[in-house]
Length: 475
Image 1 (cartoon, rainbow, N blue to C red):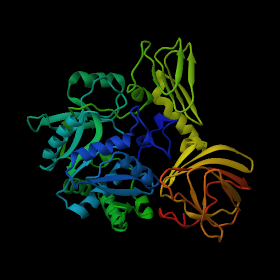
Image 2: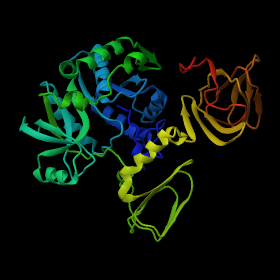
Image 3: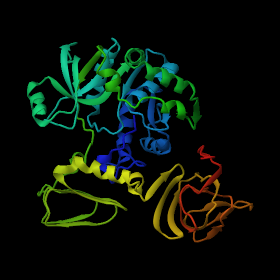
Image 4: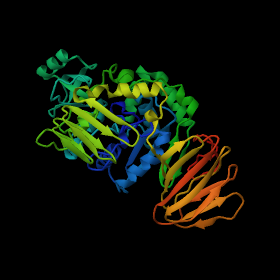
């Protein structure tokens, strides 16, 4: 499941570039790591099903392709909007049942968790599968290492096997510090990881008993959402109107807290949900002053400070206990003890409908990326990168003209009614408002060009698509 916004990791995580796409210090994304972890569990020909927003489909495919794991099959369920984990899991279970039957075993993972011990994770999953085959809904419990107030907890009940599997006595909400300390002392409580394992038949049975409306609506939605093969990937875009009728509720509230068939497997592996800048900073080695730096930074008389710089030099002088995150269009400066409150910044930006809540300066598209370099009244300048073999839609703008200058590679351009022509490096072309046009990269290296827009209105919604290889015509 890849749907969380990760607002506590603003300004790197944003609505259009959520936490699963964040690059960790080793260069791999959380989504890529989760995908590799899933692939390690399944035999050749097994299926990895990803539930994500339809806006993140192409970016997800790009992150998956970086993993270079060709021995399995990919299936995407694309949500038109987020409706929490119960609808996502119900739709996935129904899709799996239709394709593989109700005896199939599902392992449900969140795309924004970090687990480095793959051997331990595989052992725990094999344990979970054995319990799932007995009809249990199995959740993974993490042994607490501190009185953490940011996680929900699971209280272990009667033992089920010699490996430590137990019935779940109860789920409890995020506690206050005193309660968390008591949980830690008791030894009966585990952190709720939000990962699950069950047979398709078992989870659908429990959903029908405790949340029948979710199953009914999800079944109708999946039935009305035909799957298509897209370059070897099964893609299923969920019906927007039907999906919108599903209640916004977590699988914990809908089923796990109500069912009498829930078991917990204690994790024997490391686990982090990378839920704050403090958690992410711990992935970076610290210096003698307990500072941690990712990027280019100069720290003078600075202690216990985390600095992340994406492209510029960051310098600090005479400061302690800070989090400093510098991106192209936003800077976060926070006290290290208040990392959890960064979500309040994202909340305020959303209320103001500020672009910095939704997008970065560099925006991913199916064909590549664009970066806004400069803009003002009646003009905008972009850097556009088109991947080899990719092309923009055949499109037209009502209110703006565009001047394209190729700075790397070769462009194949349609402009108005003219025949397609090649534009080489250091050459340019002009697209008047109202002209149908298309840009394609026929080469084997990235096409890089500078686009200068001018006109009365320069919004991204001034676009009419006539044809698009990525299925966006008419959008």
